[in-house]
Image 1 (spheres, helix red, strand yellow):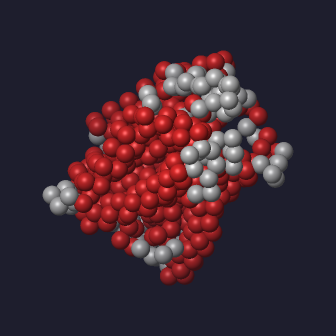
Image 2 (cartoon, helix red, strand yellow; image 1 turned 90 degrees about the vertical axis):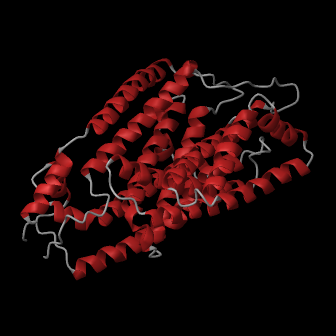
Length: 426
């Protein structure tokens, strides 16, 4: 197997050996945030849920909102990758492997949030060991395990050619490539066809798994709670899946632009504009589904439904709906994507994508919190929930952990096309 040419090897070595001041600052900030959050994570594990504002009336709070948010980011990122690897939409190929890796990292973050929310985290594996087949949550745990295994396998196959090309490189990235590939690994027409075939097979399997099992199933956890009328809807799982496509597309667009700007690489403007329009299209579908869900709740004239809507739209919690969900999550991105002067401006589309991601966080909080404020039964006291500073710091620590994993993985794994790597013939 011939080695990469001397210049390409030197360039590759220098590219990954040097750390810019910006990169060092980024890692330093994440380490500090993770250390601060880690202290409060340990405190929560030792002391229990007394560090939170959770109660018998509001058992789910910020951590569950972040959990369904990151599961949605994962499912959305994965489904975007299937457009490339299953349906052959090569115009998005630049973000294909990044989409798979993002999906893995988001699932790690999501499950960490669930672990924090469990009253007895040490019993987390009980749903796997003692499988109650009538429990949607138990089914979800099994779906998550299969889904993560599929993501890891698909990412490996997607990276295999680049890993083989990196084997001769004498740096950390090359060492990792040698660890992840066999010594006699080859790249030829036969192996390329084999890899493409498996990518299509795994991606095809993953589509129903992500839609029905992972994020649709997460929505079903809420939809089957008949005591909460605002959750108890057949359209709820579908809303979860569509909003996952919105947030996943927005996240990948933002990651691609920010990363290329930070590394001073050229940006594929045509791809960014196309992703922004796709994001807006998913957003319109999501808005339509939410409109009908809210319309049914209002038209029923059920006291509980009306109280839930009033809590979300006209109480002390309404800033989340009008300001975050509708303002940042809808008005700002739609204006920036379709206004003539900003529709092809990279910075404007980046702001639109970030606004959508923040808006979907608002959506998740508006799903989880307002519905629990309303008393379940007449005579029960109304609840009042807002995350404690400890809950916020735990959340910051978990997100910082995920960003560290993503940053290190992006640095050490071939998640992008690299023109400096020449093909190695077997």
